[in-house]
Length: 497
Image (cartoon, rainbow, N blue to C red; front, top):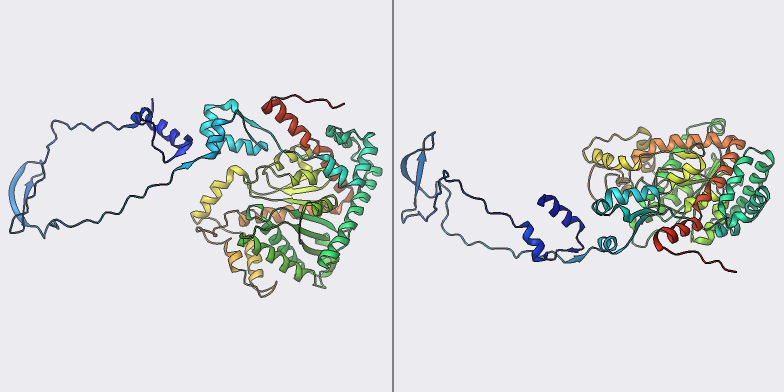
């Protein structure tokens, strides 16, 4: 038995931290006494400091034999007489209960809420437990209800789905949404699909005017990110991309702008926790960028930026059906699943995102060509952070241009050094770009160029939109609940007459 390995696993897997081990277990780790070789000379140390402060020492030759005895001054050997030593009281670590370990031990099943999340749980978070009980670990990808997130919040699209699938059964049996795939190129369906989207966008135009005072046009691409404001969700990457877009526009003639960019309305929604200062800085920055761009007569309707105040579920029910593009751009490996990405897909919204959370499975279901992918992958993140800590990261010139543009005062006199500073340096709390905004920025803006290209071809874009709805059937909460009932709860469905 490898006691060192056992002790290491026990340290990782134990439920009670900083508690004494039971004696039967503690005995296993008692270190044996080190025996002394017979040939080893044992030297007894005595107090040899004499009244004259002399110390007796032994000299040896190269073979180790004693050659002489001499007396030296204690001061020369830096030997002090008895010196009082002040001992600090030992710090006793607090006793803790590791709730996660308790849950794994006490529960009969452990699951992640998306395939990539479940793999992280098995390979990283609870690897020792997984090696001990592999049969206990499962995956149950999250889902959302189509009754609310299509049927209730998007009546125009619901009517189209019912018409082209020939039944309303899709509301309960979402696999019927897949039948839309065979009509994806149909011109009549595409025309109806675009009209439904436009009618939803007109509602949002009125809502934004009422809530923010900004006027936007429904024929622009509606690019939406609605999430809790958090650094790992990377609203900062989104707004930096918008700043880059705006800066490039300002360097072009009016004709060049129309050639290189499609009109966009960039909408943010979400709340920042009361004490999360950095999140509040991000909201402030978004609103400052919007105030500048939205009043720039050279840009006009080619680019608008709006932060929706008082964001809530009712607002989400309004925005999601109107979205053309949704941003799910969190740092890979940090989003357990996400459910807004599922809601957007159900409503025919095309997504730009990283391989994180349920994005991985959404991309598989709707088709790789119908999802705009960018950024580092989960298995690369630790190495990229180490590269940063080692001072080897070289930021992209375009990223540096954006930071300099912000610091120039282009969006007002507010000092954004604390916000931008979080993206700089190689180490330290609130520094070193922990969420890899700078690393993924080049890939992100290149991906956004592909988005513009696709949106110019409305037939292609509409087909992509239809296939997103058709491929979203897996992400019904009905499927998720049935899997829990069968594989974890061990219960059977009851038919209600």
